[in-house]
Amino acid sequence: MKKLADALYLICITLWVGGMLATGYLAVPVLFAQIPDRMQAGNVAAAMFTTAGWLGIVCAVLLLIILGCWHGARVATQRVFQIVVLMLALGLIGQFVVQPRIAAIKLAALPLSVAESPLHADFARWHGVSSVLYLCEALLGVVLVVVQGTGRKPAA
Image (cartoon, rainbow, N blue to C red; front, side, top):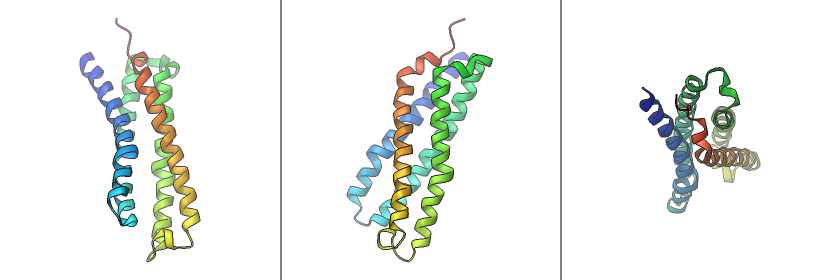
């Protein structure tokens, strides 16, 4: 069972952080470079970020469960636990506060694109908030990858 938990721990970190970096800093920039229609590219990007966000939430919950099982009441003192909680909080804010606001602005702008509507400044502001949250979560993810071994249960 320990080997399964070890594998799941590493897989969750890999999927979460790798998925974030690949989506936000590889796939989406390529998407906007290749699809001339920015509205269409934005819709695809939004779907990709939503999927990556849900993956992150699932991975975070699994990591917190594993860390809780390994460290018990001391779990809150673990650096890895603290990083996962911060990353999860940023992801939840992005997924359930910022992204719905951005989607509502895009919907309110119809039939125009957001760029052509009077809501452009509001959209740009929320998009900026989203970008900063995502960058912070991604940087914490890189730190998580570097320190992840410290979260492992000590050998018994």
